[in-house]
Amino acid sequence: MKTNYLKGWRPIIVLLLFFFLWEILVKKTNVPEWLLPAPSKIIKEMITGWESFSGHLLATTKLGFSGFAIGVCIGLLTAVLLHVVPFVRESVYPLLILSQNVPVIVLAPLLVIWFGFGVLPKMIVITLVCFFPVTVAALDGFKQTASDLIHYMKMSGASRQQLFWKLELPHALPAIFSGIKISATYSIMGAVISEWLGAKEGVGVYMTLASSSFRADRVFVAIFAIMALSLIFFAIIMLLERLLIRWQLKGAK
Image (cartoon, rainbow, N blue to C red; front, side, top):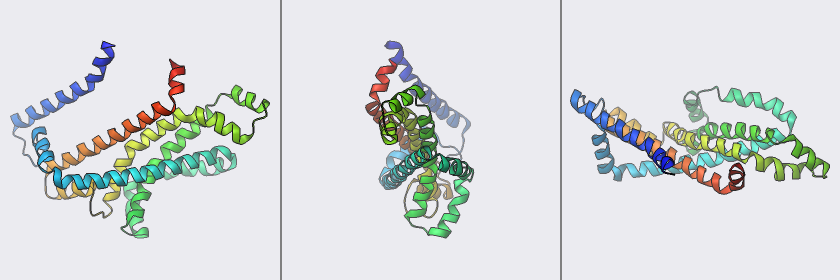
């Protein structure tokens, strides 16, 4: 028990050590603040500029969560469709893989041309980032259902619908949550990228303004905020996973 407790603190200790060395290095080498600010300077800017930054942070959180929810729903529906209809899977799945080879940062300007500067192109960017990990993870989870259990249910007279809802979907939940956790971390990044398309507020806008004015401390505030939001989203999904698939965790013990 004590060993597990210490393991939980190890990443925090390493992170504190990293910031300490960063602080010492910047001060000893007299690096200009516009090039690389010290952690103390970044924390100071985070505190003093919180009133103006909080609005941008809230806007990115709302945008990221909305796009994440849409992306997860589309990813799950796509996975179910590809799993239930093999013909569609064989025809569409290669195209889904090709869609992920197009850089979002390159596609973003085209979305602005096609759909303007409103919310729609931003949601499309986040959805494209989020749906694919969920689709792939869910399809893999459906395939991993034990064949003997499927055979037993078919012998018991289960319909295709009962087979999916009572066997394949419950057994695929761990894999589905793995994809959702990946999408959760990507959603904030997608939201920031989408804000570069011409948003009026958001962490992406805040970062752009800070870069153009050579305020490296504000750029790092934005970076740390993105990391914190991603970790919070990830932690929430982990909590939901433990609540929903507690029976599998007990079985593993």
